[in-house]
Image 1: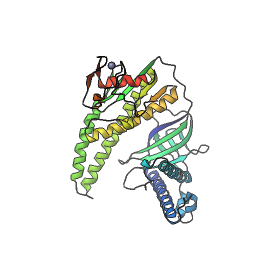
Image 2: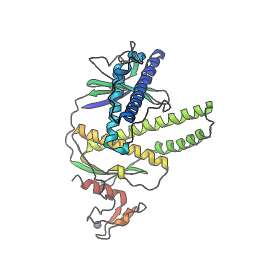
Image 3: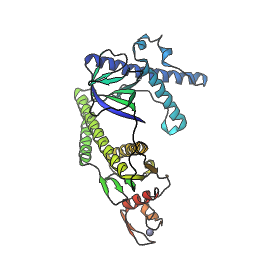
Image 4: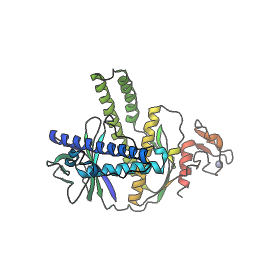
Length: 357
Ligand SMILES: [Zn+2]
């Protein structure tokens, strides 16, 4: 099975130059190919099948760049088109902006062209090796390596390996999981998983920093500094959040054989602070992704509720549907049919458990 390991890397000056050239070339070829596809379509109504190799005579400097990094951009572009044709809501492929401040390229391992040894990372076309901090050992064969630079100037290598993963021994329990904003998740056992305290704190700080940034004059040094502060905090939140999501999903997967969750795309939420909502949505999407691949790895069964499943409105005791609970402000309710009293979220989690038992 494929598994990604992400490590911090510390390129020296010369390597930084190499990496930024490759980031630039990857962005260039992506944008150029996209531009040509659009123009070709405008003129002929046909899709242009272009490849990076076709551009090397017009732009000879591309020959000096890792050709796999360019080939992967072609694949990315094809994927963006495919996603667009499959689901128009995804939107037409967009140009990669320099201003986004997030750079990356992907290269592949061809018989040892990518390797890690003695704390050093080897990548194609670069003669020297980049210092890498391997905080957990990498198992399996390296398939590809994605190098990225964050808006605050940190560099990472995400190494994709083909690894044999042993399924966990069968567990006897099953669980339903209802996610929320204030409480991260409510379980069918009646337990709650709270959002970590740092999240609230970081959110408040982020709001302050963003307000501060918006007051700074455009193009000024102070604005640059303020933007860097915002980017640093964003990165910190992301790292802490991912850590929390990893730990939470691992525990749930380890302890349960079958798990039921909502289709989070249709999750209806009380109007909450915009930022809290945005952060929660990112967290849920990532949480679902983690549960999906971990249940795959470890031989667990994950069931996602159909989008029309009214997990909140159904009485988990007698199955009676109570439309009054549609009102998100109803936190506690008594079933008019059987008289059982419910906590909104625990009841929803119990209904999600029913999907798997
Ligand atoms: Zn009932």
